[in-house]
Image 1 (cartoon, each protein chain N blue to C red):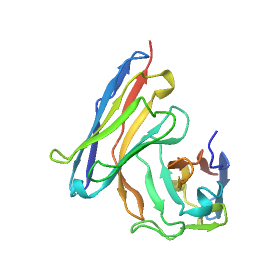
Image 2 (image 1 turned 30 degrees about the horizontal axis):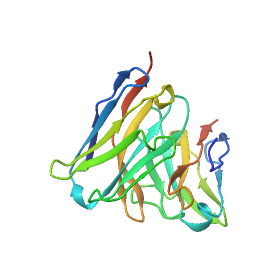
Image 3 (image 1 turned 180 degrees about the horizontal axis):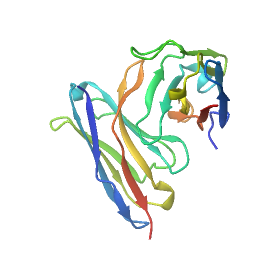
Image 4 (image 1 turned 90 degrees about the vertical axis):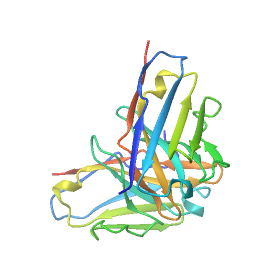
Length: 110
Length: 118
């Protein structure tokens, strides 16, 4: 069981907005930036959001991130079929002296 | 273009050892910290270990501390992971990934599968 808690699944119809939460603690999310990765089956993870709310070049602005206290969230607006994937939050943990990944959220486009 | 290519995976019996390699190209390898991250079957991503750009700094997840050793050869642009005393729960796809400061793990290899089974 991950120290970072994500819902196991989320879903929406094309065009809808989906939000994924990531809950941590003061030693990780509460004291640092959150990163989000997209994982499609059979492919390597892809960086979606860095420093909690920044998008790397090439990532559509449909993806947005935010952080408040010891929680963070990833929002996907204008949901598209190609967004169907697993999404992971990640953060450095000062107590563990290591990186943590959330358990992952499977997004299904209905 | 940036490329990370893992190799060395395979089937190994519990208690045995395996060494993974990651060949880097397309960037100045000795200026980037690197990590190993794994994905266990049907489960999520798990960070394993970090090494600084010059190899002097290393961190490990508790699950592999004392069993796995990360190293790098900057003259050969190669990252390695020595895995000893392997367990069934180490069965996973192992990815090497580049650490871009303040940006995260920006490039990943395609992964190499390690299966620990008798």
